[in-house]
Image (tube, rainbow, N blue to C red):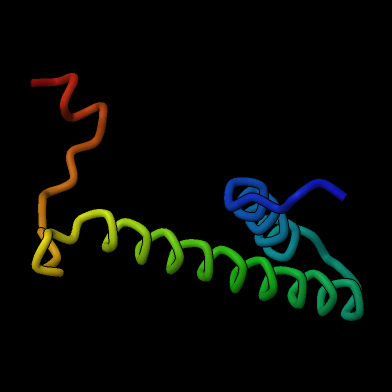
Length: 80
């Protein structure tokens, strides 16, 4: 099985939400989809937490203080 990525998990989670909202699934299938969605949500949350920790580490200075800098997306920097 291919390695799960944040992007794949988010796409699958979005599909599950659409299925649960738009179709008349039998209760058992709806519960299975819901359980899968909860697992994907936890996976995505863990990935975001890991990423935040990595970014914090990268932004620390020599005195172990976190340097806060505003995030400028590529789109925003291109607009300037």
